[in-house]
Image (cartoon, rainbow, N blue to C red; front, side, top):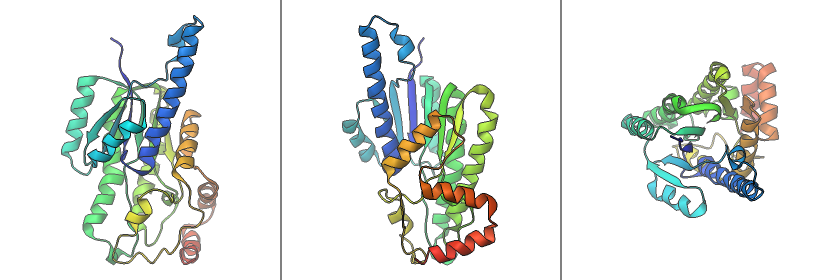
Length: 282
């Protein structure tokens, strides 16, 4: 029995998750065209089509947005409307995987959110949801999906440049992304022998997603005034997919996040937080 080759993308209703769906679909169109050309030349098409996905499973809370993606891509989509902060969602995923027994070629964990503000401006509920979605949901989904991945498959955990150092007024979010970054780096080593590549994707601010608007929706978000040199989602996703295909452990898709990663390795956290205190007032 030939297994269905799929990608699973969380947070697919908007932002980076949605853009990963679109760019993976473009890759599949290219692969299908190459495969068709190979077949016309009487070569073995199977050798040329190993990377073609049969289906993408898209997961997010907003079903109507996921359904809308169907009209934007040519690859078959399975819409799975779930809230990953709810534990019952994982039983649904487990059941689907066990019934379908797919070959998961990409798992892209793009579900996550953050809040800007002082500790007193952010509710306990928002703190819990950041930890649940950015940490627990990422680990739970990865644990569920990994048994269905094989050599050559890719795991992309969408972390953040915020995970490289402590960030006052973004403290829970940055701590949750530091967790995911460390988890990704360690998991990569564990899976090295299995040939499954894990890439921690660590972008800087991304201006054309809903993240900044959501993060600012607190009692007082004026602690961070502007978001200079912010990236675009298309560039972030394009670089992340290239870095994953190259098997890189960390993707810093842009100049700012690359410099930040290097600086955080050598400059003490206290000094980095002092620099941040100046930059956030710009």
